[in-house]
Length: 51
Image (cartoon, rainbow, N blue to C red; front, side):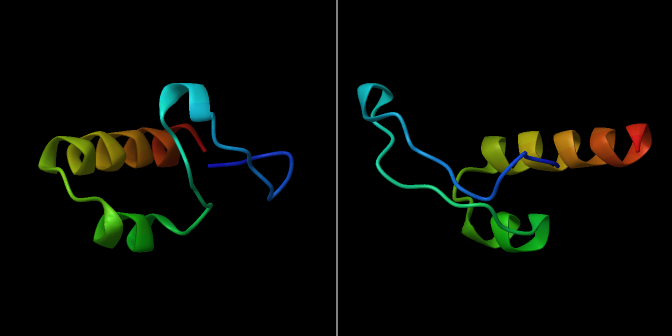
C-alpha cells in the first residue's frame, strides 16, 4: 500500500499506542488474530489486483 510519508501517529483516543509501516510478509508474522490475518491478506490481494 502507499502512503504520502513514512511517519505515522497512533490515535491514543482509540487505544492505539504504537504502530509502524512494514512489508506485508512481516506484518503477517506479527498479526496475532486469524481474523486480522485474513483481512490483511484479502486487502493485499485486492491491492495487487488494482495495481
